Image (cartoon, rainbow, N blue to C red; front, side, top):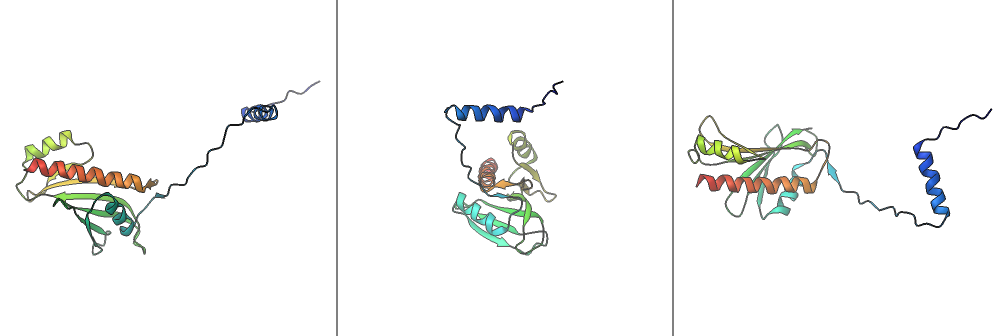
Length: 171
């Protein structure tokens, strides 16, 4: 009595591929893949380089916060914002797993209705009034799971655009 042979799909595909190759048919090319570095955490120096690649910003690092480094960014058009680096391991260099973008406007420059309107149309960031009536803008980015430098650069560009829109609304 003949015992049936069990074949998996992979075995069948391999057999077909070998037959095609033996018959002289072209084999599909294997494309070389370029490794793109990803970041599960980032230090202040790497983040500064990414910010600098997006604008002619003046960046001032501040390491006095025990929660993690803060980068103060001043753009040539006068707009300023900060990036708080959070979820840091406290090692050297201080590697942080999340970023908190923040911008503040002068007290009284936006009222509650303007901030509500901004939040209704804004996709990436949230505006709010602090307890002292200071209009603030916040956007968070998570690095966990791995992101590319291009992803972080895109987040920087989005926040610069959002801050610009926020400042225009205050005028």
